[in-house]
Image (cartoon, rainbow, N blue to C red):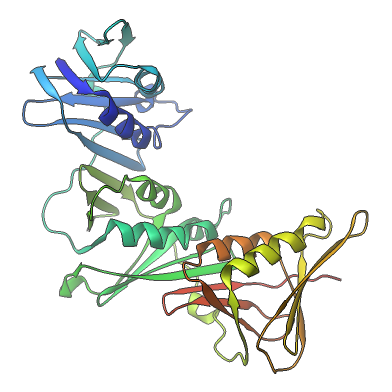
Length: 367
């Protein structure tokens, strides 16, 4: 193999590919990226056997076709630190050399025939949506997935397609985020589906570089979901298990509804949380006539109180929340204002932004 690569394109590709390369594995081949240089197209692949990326590299001049698998961390470091616009890759007999204007690196590789198969996208898509919409939806729900749990179903994001809308739902048992995004295409026979996509895969999709109005094509093959966008194909196993019946968690009978400024509320929550501690991790929201007070207290430090004027005529209520969970939700609100809905002190709070974003947050005791 001999090929001339544009370094800038390599940096972007390696940034995504190394996201799936495992740092520890009993299979050393998985710590490699596969380079496949062909006259018609050059591709680089990475996989951890659960998620795989197939990346088409543009701007490559191939003098000799060939394939080799090389350590991803070593190659990424060389590409990142190089000052050259073009890097020349040569591979023969399991050895890859990377040559710049004043540098030459020799990397011992592995045979391409040992590398696992990474899925390719073939045939028609079942749904299509813009990358911009998908990444905005990921931003509004991914933070609410469970990080460590034996209930694997909530380690992922539930996808529900209905008509020309895709709903993305995530929960960790203490909060729930749901957002809806519009679809460009939804084939009639595949109009309604429910499936769980791993959080790791959703994070990968959020890292795809957005250059123009790219469209993401999506299809299912057996127990895998495939995404194709511009030069990138991502294949992922689906999460097995049953996602909680989230609709039962969303309150529908609340009468206490307050319209708030997103920026002002985010600032108030952050300031009220400044004097909380590990033992008193909650902040209190005190709603009364025309006033909302955020307060935090730590016995060994002191207390904080931040107030704002609101348009509210209902019954007073005090409710405690985890301030970080409130901050996470408010960062995901993409509108200048949102609506806060409250029930009793022991019932969840609800944040709504327009008709497409909803967040449910369990209260905490401040006793």
